[in-house]
Length: 332
Picture (spheres, rainbow, N blue to C red):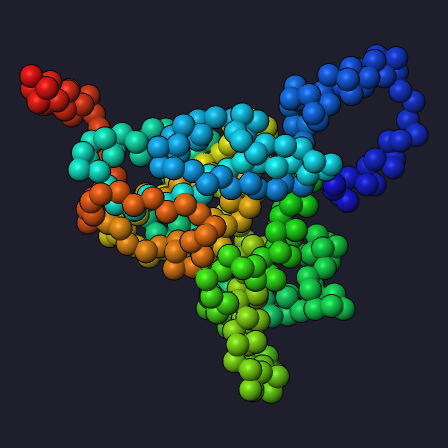
């Protein structure tokens, strides 16, 4: 997949192979074939990632979230593409049994490779003062972002990441800046500041087309966000060996912990597209992700009750003990 590896591959193709190297290579080709389901570590590191977001029931979230990608329905390797089944769900409301609800939240939060957020906005990205110039410099003759220009740009901050991840990020930036259908509207933006010259040019170019101007500003906003992805997200991707444990981002939005933002939605959609699980708990039943993303792109599970300002809390030993005692007396 990766063009970043081409030069390296060309320079090593003429090197003499030892007998041990050839034997190891033959063993890997026979026993670690992509259809064998016996993979070596990082076998698909340079593959293109295709997320296959599962449509599940609420009860299945805790079941499939604990399974490795290779065990989940939908896992497959097709050519140079690896299809990773992942979860994108929002749970709105709570049970009557708050202790059970909190136990289910904590069972996800405490899993391996999990980022947990309970304050919003989750991410803060400041507009680059020259984002208009940067965006224009990356466009090809068709008015789309050119992948090679993007990867070679002085604003590319991801050079220390695995080559495969860099290639996938570049592809997502190009895709996102074409404003895919998952966006509810095509007018979201961060607070971009244009120079006087840019303001004048936009006034002339989009004088009678407000929609086109809004789309352009959204594209620039997305480029700004995607060129400044949160380091915690990048670390999560670096540790993701695709057939194995699927990393997770768990949100707990009590309704009183700040505002979910366009920047949050953009980075969550990026992580979803990279095969990461996204699970949002919202006990107050308020809107967050659905303000930005069409609901057909994630599962929305509504529980029986609404609980405003229910803070995130772990159930300790004594709370669980009291619960067991109460349940015992109810049965007797």
